[in-house]
Amino acid sequence: MQKPTFSYAKLKGRIIEKFGSQRDFAKALGISEGSMTNKMTGHTFFSQTEIYRAIEVLDIDPKMVTSYFFTV
Image (cartoon, rainbow, N blue to C red):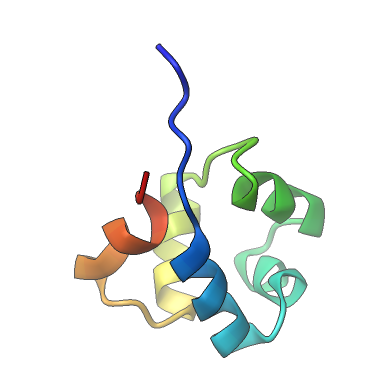
């Protein structure tokens, strides 16, 4: 089975809106900037824990998780 490719365009916009940079968002999640880059470019996936933490720090309605993390 082929690995899905997700679009994080909406997530990127929210990150800039709330943190100003992907680097600062990565710090808030407790991961490295390199790890964040790998996730945002589709080389690795966000873990469930990272998604949960992200919706907290980005103030995303849990009902909207799909539109931020699972848009193919």
